Structures are given as structure tokens and as C-alpha cells.
Length: 218
Image (cartoon, rainbow, N blue to C red; front, side, top):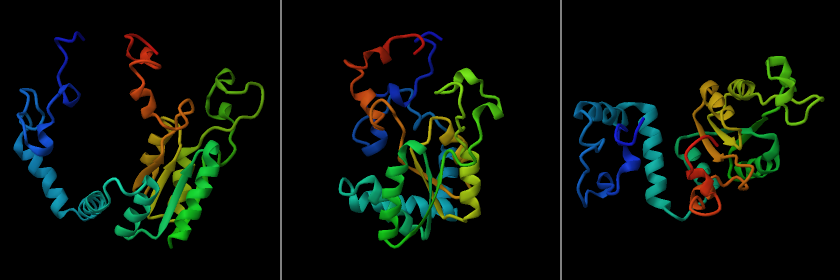
């Protein structure tokens, strides 16, 4: 698709008038080019759907009361309490088990219960589900697959009220969210290269990671 044929969206906008309404909307703006009935249908959910209403109000209260004051860890604790969650599930990567242990201690210190399931639960070798031997990180030995389905299922059995992702791989996090019965939020997003700070690659795309802006495959 050429740049001329591209359908413009929010990343093409230079004046986010939708936030404070202190400017003008661009011609392609999704706010002005979407049917008002669709917005009203969404707004109705915020007003009347029990889940959406409770979660959106809790999120708004945290933003309005603690903007720039609380860490992500603290926000999750406050959010959990505002929605009435008592038991926090932790879906953790094996590589971030120490971080998960610290978070579990914090959760308990703040009066909530925690239950964690590591990604390698079941110890199933990758080849047993069709992953070729040559795609293992270390060839020729047992290498357990990441098992986000069982992470979700085991947390479902524990009847957790809110599940927290701690560094699950790209894709595995998607599977976990699909199978989790409880709502999911993320504490840590895995990025092995940047020390789990994926935004760093965006901030440095003009210099250290300028290859990201080169057209073509990674």
C-alpha cells in the first residue's frame, strides 16, 4: 500500500483535539468520522454495564487522585481494592520470578492474597506440541514450553479476582488473556534487550535504534 492510499488514523494526527478540545479536528479524525450512534452505544456501557462502569470509574479515580504520584505497582494495588478484588493472580515468566516474588510480598503486605503460576508449569518439552528442535534456545536438551493456557486455567481454579502479567512473552501474553477468567492487567512487559523497558527502543529510534525506522523486515 502506498502512502497516498493509506487510511489515516490517530498516529497521523498532530493536534489531539479530542483530549481538551482546544484546537481543531483534522479531516480524517475518528471522532468526527465515526457515527454518533456508535459512540453512544459505547457510552451506554460506561453508564450501565456493571463491569465496565466499575472498572472505568476505578481507573478514573486513580488517575484523578494520584496522577504522577503512584508507581504502577501501587496503582495495581489501589485499583484491586477499588474494584473489590481480594485475590490477585500472578502470571509470571520464569525469567522474572524474582520480580514476581517481590510483587507477591507487596500484595500481601497491603492486605490482599496472591497466587502465582510460572510460565513453565507442566514442564512439557516444546517438541511435544510441534515446536522444531532447531527453534529451541538450547538445542538437544529438554526445554519446557511457555504454557499460558495452563497459567490461566490454574488461576481460574483458584478463582482469582484480578490477574497480573509479569513479563510473559509476546504472544504468550495474548493467549493468557484469552483464557483468563478474571480481568487482566500488566505489571511488567518483557523486553530482554532493554531491561523490560520497551519504550526505550521508541525513545532512541532516532539514533541507537534507528534501524527500526528503516523500511523492510526486522
